[in-house]
Amino acid sequence: MVTAAPGEDRSPALALVNTRRVEADDLVSPGAAADWLRERGLAAEVPDAASLSRLTELRAAVRELLAALAEDRTPAATALETVNAEARADTAALTLTWADGPAREWHSSRPGGLDAAVGAVARDAIEVVSGELGAMVRACEAHGCIRYYVREHARRRWCSTTCGDRVRAARHQRLVVEQRGGGG
Ligand SMILES: [Zn+2]
Image 1 (cartoon, helix red, strand yellow):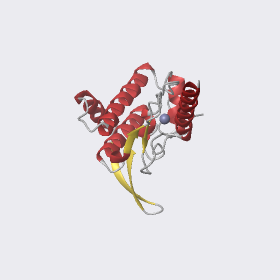
Image 2 (cartoon, helix red, strand yellow):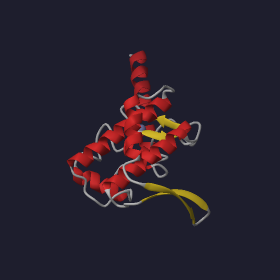
Image 3 (tube, protein in one colour):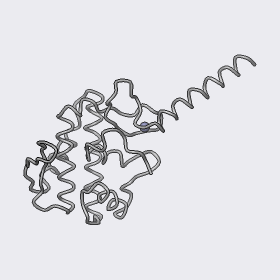
Image 4 (cartoon, helix red, strand yellow):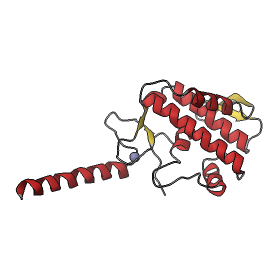
């Protein structure tokens, strides 16, 4: 079980991007993708091959948007096109809810299906990238990690304590080797 990176709880789009890691892919098969969609409360359906490739294409497009943000550049036009097209995958209405206070939610006209899931993630990507959360998105600096996270603390440079520990261990290892090299 992988710990979620900071911000994944607030953004399904960020969570989607982080389903692809160096060592694993949570969307490797329709069954695995169905588990992920269900865990996120996005869809109950098991995607067919075509839906799965829509999901992985959307993931690549959102990754490009996050990379563009983090690198302060304009993203590839195809990434924008994919996200904008998928944001219209289902019809959804901006809805005001009032539980602990006012909150905005998109309500799909066909909830539970793949179109609703893809549409929800794409709309979240648009909101995140264009909003204040987007300004805090960073790529994990640990070697061999390709996850993104929301930097809530100025000093944070890694997506997880696992990555932070790995970097510190590697630094320590280098130091030991250097000292040995210097002494011998
Ligand atoms: Zn990391």
